[in-house]
Structure formats: structure tokens, C-alpha cells
Length: 157
Image (tube, rainbow, N blue to C red; front, top):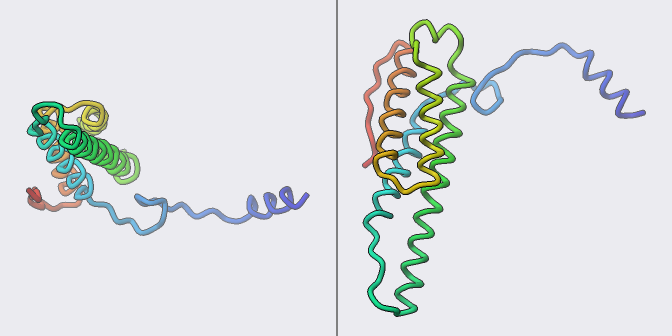
């Protein structure tokens, strides 16, 4: 009964449309967070590929190696997931139909970048991690061009 009454009240209230990356009305968007996450994916991928397994059967050395390896993998996977989340926010919340006239490959660019995040999450492939960075760089330029700016692409490493 109470649920029905509350639903009726809420359904009768005027609804204001709001949009933002966090489902709040702040309207703050920036591809920098996707870049940082993608850059971490590339960094962890390089570290994983450079990691040397210990020689012999020393259990302490192997435990240390396995710990480091698993931590690097966990970070890489977490950051690939974060990059995908940030890209999807830009794609679905920031970019609007009117942007398609300027960026004819907008959907394809985001779709491929999202797929690269997934690929980087489940593999240790430096080439794919570098492709992800290139995709995020392209999205960076699209984003700033859509705002009438030409902000420089700057990486942390």
C-alpha cells in the first residue's frame, strides 16, 4: 500500500533531464582518466614481459616472483577495466548525435578502443596495449576538437 502511494507521488512529480559522467549534473568530462588507465595497462604489460622467472626451485624466490607477477596482472586487468569504463562514459554520455557529423568514425573508434581494453585485460600483449594508447589518443583529440580546443596529448611516462 505504502509502495503504491509513494510510486504514485513520485510518478506525478515533474522530471528534469540531467546528464553527466556520474549520473549527476556536474557535466565534467575529460579523457585524461582513460589515458592514465591505458598508460598503466601499457606499463604493467611491459613490466610483465620483462619479469624474469627465478632460476632453480628456491621456494622463496618463486613465491616472490609469483607474488609480483600476480600483482602486475591484477593491476593491468583493473586498469584495463577502468579505461573501458572511462571510455564508455565518454562515448555514451558526453558524445551526442550531433558529433557524428564531425567524427564519422566516432562509434567505430570507441567500439574498437573498448574491445582493446578487453583484449589487454585478458592477454599480455604489448602491441595491443600500444594500440589501446593510440586509440585513447585519437579519442583525446576528438574530445578536445568537439570543445573547440586543441589540448596537447601528454603522457605521464
